[in-house]
Length: 164
Image (tube, rainbow, N blue to C red; front, top):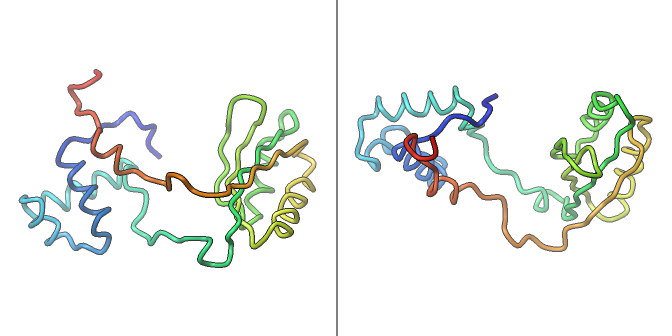
């Protein structure tokens, strides 16, 4: 996985924005829209995948449309030296979509989905069953004001000459 130190240039930015706008586009059509050779597009896409800029080509899944309308953020405090154990336990819970190491009072922040509040309570109880987890704090999202997005970064991405 990339450390994020790489940069993208204006062609990469245009390529990524076009791919996001047209997820099923083929390389030939992408090249036509960008006004560059198909080989150039293929080479750029391969480099972006190799660098980890492009993480996948799968569809975006919407959990709420699959019967998981509750979105919660669960902060976890982990017992000293037991982070790996806690993460292994979290990986066994399919409703935990993400877990991030954090600074501050919590050690991990998890993005969790549930069928209803009772189901969320069961998930939290399952998390707390791990001896590696000392405490949880849960916040339920009432609405999404800004959905996950990446396009603004693509339009403001610095060129290699900026900031270096």
